[in-house]
Image 1 (tube, rainbow, N blue to C red):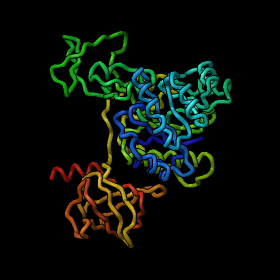
Image 2: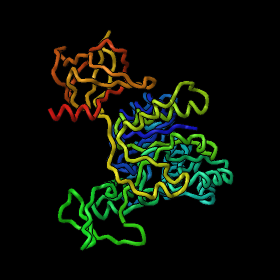
Image 3: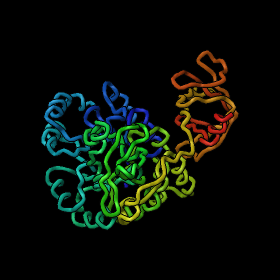
Image 4: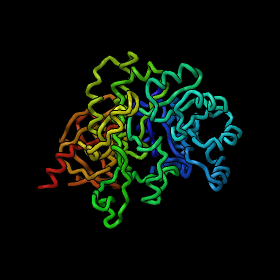
Length: 411
């Protein structure tokens, strides 16, 4: 099975591949359902060609196209052709003819946004030129198995980790109504995950950051109109996914951090390799690392039925660690470039993780500025080097315990 990771910018793409992805998916500005991700434009395609190597790369053009969007696509086809895409991920079949005409050798993958959840739909998309279908998140393992048995000549891709949606694969109008940001145009504000207070007498909701704005509640038998779904985590069920016929395992999260991309990709890489006999070590530690990345309560989605996912989470985001930065290229023996994401104060205990190194702790390091002078703190956006005798490498992730940060802040 292919392991497919998200990349919201060039840096995330580099770490997706470095930490074990077979393939990555990115968005092109104005045509992707994650407009809040950095996405890709300008001359970044040159860097991408260098990073990609023999890995796979898929480009998301999965918005629903209005007339102006079609004109915009037409104007940008030459620019898009600069990217080394192996496939386009699309949901609007209105652009199929144009893409097949302009990119005859590039595969078409159907986006989950198209809500494909049955074999007859899969057959139809196959017949018009799609080589892969990203099934709707609402598809169960039993349904996947039936679809694969009826249409064995098309690849099936499924989301196995990350955020779920309260609507059918993202077809939600809540964000557009409450924040004037359409999820179907790539601008979802995740209104379903905001914090609300219920005013029972008036039967309205009030959102924590919008006092005085009231939203009516329409209540039916055993449900309310706003739910915050649990995240999905299928790392313990990869064999079942394989046996059902899944060809590609997709991690959600183009808007999330390098830390998320690296840790989640690494955990699933080890789990897939364990399943196929390529990794003989223990994966328990790598699996536990998933709990250390910011997430909501985990579930198995719809794969084993509806009971788990239909119960909304009552917990906010869970975060055990803070992403502090990454280790850049070596400056010489014991010195490495330091790319700071959150303020680092020399002497505090940090944890370092690598593609094949679970983690190790250290407070034995110095940080110097570009003039080689020791600093008492390192801030995001400035140039530093970290000097240490620890066995670190370029691409290592640096993090700090969130509990330690709270203790330090209290002092």
